[in-house]
Length: 218
Image (cartoon, rainbow, N blue to C red; front, side, top):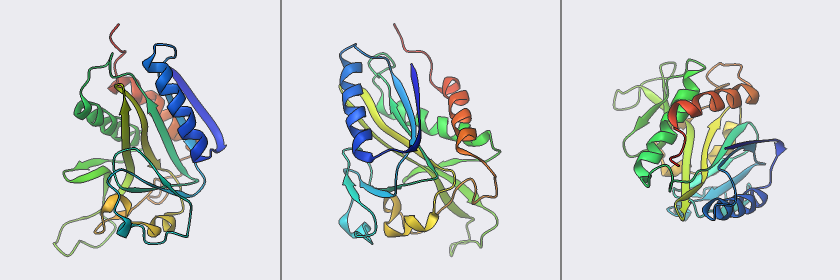
């Protein structure tokens, strides 16, 4: 499998074009699987379930219609995007299991920084409990989103993937209702008080990937 790491900012159109071509090549047996780690310039993407009412500031950043699952998502500098192009034909054609593996991978990577990520029923992505914030109106601990997941499959090959907030401008998320969720906030590793670099996150993602994803069946 190829690990592809791109410095600087990658245009969203270029990333989609690469994924489209690579997924077709993987499906045809002409290319190996790939995980691509990158950052985008500030932009919003609309998944297949996006509601226009959740785009609160449509003129703030470019908005791209994405064929991945999910609702509106922000991408921008300081956020590590991991585009995951894996062949589920050789890994078991189980979409729910694959999503669970992606969630487990994110949680394992966060744990490398002693951050306890959690999954919540009915809420997409990975969440962290904020003991430093006031309790919610229901008396529950506050929770913020730290990572997002959005996928598409073509011929059982995955693309799009995950994003982890390392040190993005959190105010940029206010132009949308992230993933359609209004009652919770957004955080990042640096916002949590951790001086983590993008290289640190890349190392954690590569270290924990092979603990979650086994080698594909031959």
